[in-house]
Length: 205
Image (cartoon, rainbow, N blue to C red; front, top):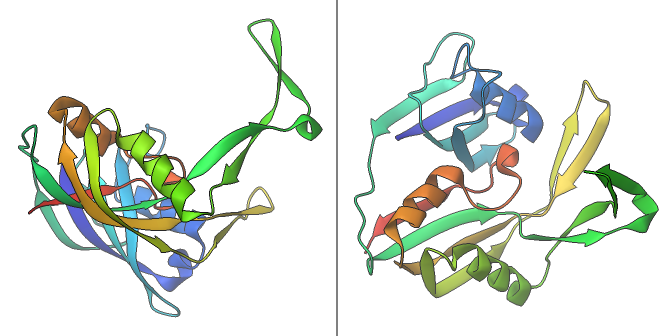
């Protein structure tokens, strides 16, 4: 895998939807492929732009049309079961509920009530959500939960907008299943990956 530090100018970073599209320019000719990168905005300055940390399976390629690639390194985890790690994760903790006002949808000949995603706003709910996400490969030891402002975005071509509620998790965990842990770090945790959620950063203690 590769870790990159990237600068995205304000004109592209102001709208999270456009920021995500800008990152795709670091992977020319792969715009129609499945996303093989995760990212987190580390700093956002109005009028200047965003500093982004990105993890990718493919080495990014900088060009005049792409964001500025500030630093790049290849890395592997080499973890062991029982290893304790510090971690950082921006996530979008949600629950999915049925909403009859949205109507129904048919799947394989059966009719289902449509669902909606509802943000989990209380810290105890957010911690329980994270524990469920980690339970198959890691055990949570300590945790700090930092609320964040609502993230607004707009899809210009589709003429619609939306919002998500993110939180920042910091803490210590213990690896319980290395193979599953490595897979989950590659895949990311939770929804809203296109808006900078899901990147689980770890460091040895």
